Length: 224
Ligand code: DX5
Ligand code: ZN
Image (cartoon, rainbow, N blue to C red):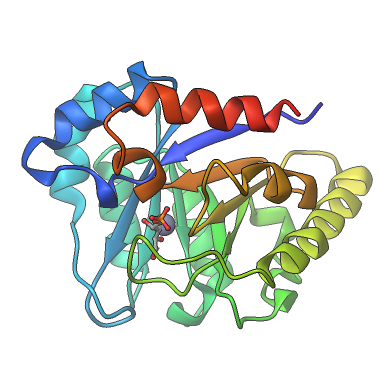
């Protein structure tokens, strides 16, 4: 069976006590901390920079997965790598030289991934599969937490799974398939059946008082 990973997005956490929120959600069973970086330019919202990533780093040994919704990408990618990120993903439309940016992220010691918006084609993945550790399929338009899952994303996830499996069967290695936006207890099993292995969930987890209860319920759904 595929290995599943649950990645709470701290976008929906209590920013006044972010360190504890990170520690608590990992203690509740989270695998990865998803950090949404928005610049009020590439997306119409503003969140956090590398200083905050550095500040939360000591609170967990879990992987920090930085989702850059910024333009330009390169300088911030390097700063987040230095601030303790383990994985950095970005939107290909936001970089003038996608191949170079992927290389830059890996050269700075992080895993690298591309993010595909709901209306963006999968051909952004062509010619760079060898430089990818993860593909992130957006199931909402980026910019805000708490939006509803766009059903067409399931089709996109299936197509991405086919591409990844075809690539890794031929060339080896591992490429994770992450889904971000509107992931809940009641749709996570269907998203997994479409081919996802890594699940970002912001409001579904941080919007409830019992993080462990939500994460356990998600894992139970994934086991069905
Ligand atoms: C949206 C962000 C998501 C967001 C998910 O731009 O990339 O990570 O926090 O939030 P939920 O799970 O509430 O849809
Ligand atoms: Zn995200």
